[in-house]
Image (cartoon, rainbow, N blue to C red; front, side, top):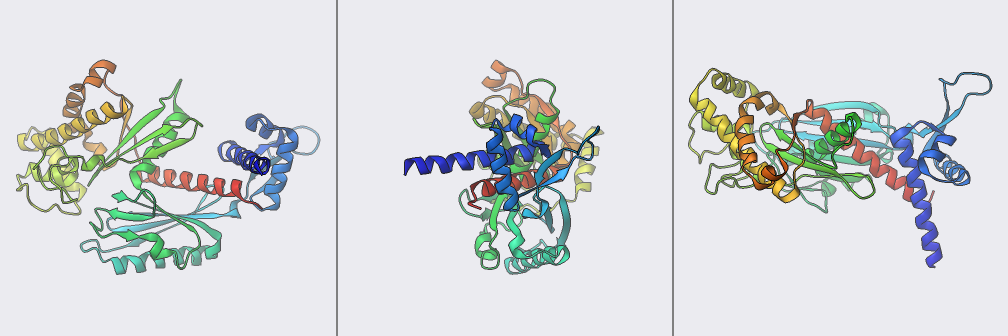
Length: 404
């Protein structure tokens, strides 16, 4: 019995190795699979044969081959083996992205929604209609979709696909398994979107780094709200990411009201609504607006750059809240690079002095120096890439564990 269990574990592990090589380096030849997987020629032949029979991978001729003889045969994922629908919930819209098993974006649909009131019944209809429209446009069936991966800002249950709180729906809990499970056999997942952007940013930095890359990195998202994700390499070399509730860490007890209903959160100072509230001396107990047009932030930023003291004070308070929060972060997790993304990147010059000052006040920064701070553009694409790559990894695990 122990021998059988051990043999099955070895089989799954070896299949996972082959799929990992194809994900990271494919299409590849039999020889390259040998080199990159560390498996024997017999094992590679057996596993690729199984995966091809199961419809998970297929073969192609290497069109770049030169010289005499037959072209090299390459192995690659079979695009139609499985599909993922990535769903991003934004304040005023839902974005549905269809991705095949290779990772190619096949379609993207946006559904506009009214955000002033959190109408859960209408949102449920919009979700179901959007997913059905993806199927209709792609000529796929529900059984072709193996994962529906949903992302949103907010607080997510660690074990179940449940959104516990979000700036879109407030404290209305949304159980996506209960919503979609009766009609969809796909795996339903929900994740804080900053977790995905942190994962994608980490992978991008590692691909483009000259020399040794850091083992851990934080990505700070600045916009209507404030989010932070941390990505790191685990012992197996896999990128893991998580999103602590950074924006809703208390900066000053009994401070201004945050969108979450608490007082004095970092976001209540550094989110767009917090900056505007400070700049225009709006009472601290005013319920924050769900949406702040970016042109209003640009207006306040222009005032600050022209020397308006109240506008400068608003950005100073935001930078202070962010800096103190990051100082606490590196006290808990040690110094790591900080990447700044989101719409708030464009006003980071106004936040940066106070942010750096308050980070430098912490013991860790004084011992290990200030963390490296960089700006990274296109947060929307980071979120999509992180969601896609995570979903495809889950499919690889599913196929590695499959009994055929």
